[in-house]
Length: 596
Image: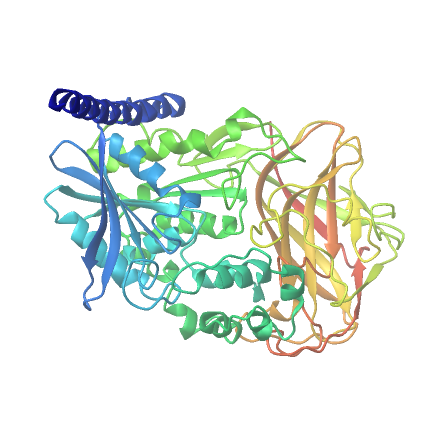
């Protein structure tokens, strides 16, 4: 009886060994196939993972990290990602990044930030990330498996965990890849003094507690309409101190200065590969970050930073129902650029990553990548398209026109902006709650009588718009304060209108974010509105369109139009808005036209 038992045991042991070998082989094949697909060097390493390593901070708090390393003993450069979303969150694919980088010969560290998931301490957005990030970089640079060269990597909040410690000048920090983020937190969330309401509220609700909580079943339509805004979190059963603090600090100042880096760029010595998307709400800030790094950062290496912009949303999405940007649009195709960036700065490989122009971007419509030496590209012609009409530009069926000739005369257009019936957000940049970012058909918006629409004739030839778009608007309001929500769109021959870029402008902030200036009733003002950056080829036969409305809700919080603080009051007021376009008031959309 003993012999069969021994045979069974031997068979079981062989089966376990075979399964382990098969798993190891499958693991290796996974990274080989992925490397082939992404155009990366064939991976030279199998991967081992060490979970729950506690990293001490200067104040004794310990932060939990998972470490992905090449299985072979040795010293390797380090890539650090610090997250508030949980280092084992399957939705963020940290294990994918860890395995990918480790198979390419890096130690990859993913760490829960202070007060989140397995890390000790209390969480408050952003304020601990400078010191904690610096301490973690110092720790990673001195391990026996580290070459002493550390890079940082990550999206959004993970991007802030890179920028914030960068001015502290760790000798180990050699390169950064901040993606869809910015050096200054205030305009990220409180754009032009206006709350990015939908994402501010949902983000705080889902992520402010120590562990993320599900938003399943939440009635976001009701939540975003809650007034006053400071009670919106309470309506969800979650009184969140950080959310309330943000509502109570709608202006720049000491509260926000604690977490801004743009004024300390001269202390940053590590170069950054700055990545963003045409449909991300940090786009314009990221472009400004790049320009600062090139102009005033603190080392020759930092001034070799690059900018990469693709047809992506904040979540890197590049496929949409109402727009097709082709096979080259995928964010995944840019992973090879990220790996090459780290290979150059952390391994010393001369791979040509700095060759060509430092500004690399995707032109939508043409669906092609190109490189330039500056942004906007040299030779850009800023071309005015004048608003014209006979006073009935309301909706897409109105008489609003965009023309390259200045108007000699023109009856003004008007509409009523009603905070209780706001113009809905369709497409754009907001990713949380019920909203979807990206290019979407605008016809439901352009059917409203409280939306002014101005459109060119069908284009006689392909017209490329690449650079910053601006609107010079002559307008008046019956209210003490109001917003102008503007949107650039492309109209196809079949009538489909798809958003390209958008902005909301708060009239009381026209002179300063620090000192709002109420409007005089019915006085005509000249507003200069930065609509934002883009690169879009408007094809022959297509048309260029401009929308003007009183709101873009709930992506942006409503202006209640009373002149009182919009975060702590619940009273609303309708306002009549008038847009002028005549010889004395030449309202115009200024497009950066690039010769082709």
